[in-house]
Image (cartoon, rainbow, N blue to C red; front, top):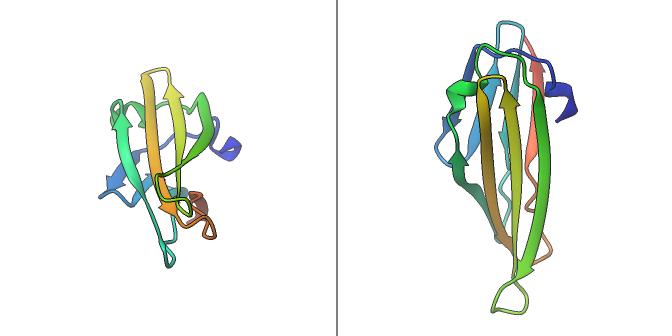
Length: 114
C-alpha cells in the first residue's frame, strides 16, 4: 500500500465486486483476491467516490482488518478495510471474506509497470 503514496492516477475503476484498478499512463495497481476452494472474498462496500482518487496524489493508503467466528465453529468471517485519500476526498473499500479457516481471505495488490 505504501508504494501507492504520492501516485497520481488518471483512472480508478471498480469491476463488479471482485477488483479495483488504479491506473495511469505508466503503471497500474490491481486490488483483488485470487479465489480458492472453500472460500468467498468480495468487495462488500465502497464508501466515497472513486473519482476523488483521480487526478490528485494519493495522500493516504491504509489497510486494517479483523475477523470473527461464525455460528458454525469451523467457519471464519474476515473483513479488510482499505482507506484511500487525496486532497479531493476519502474512499473506504470494505472487503468481506469467509472460509473454513484453512484458506486465506487476504486481498492482493498487484503492481504492473506498462
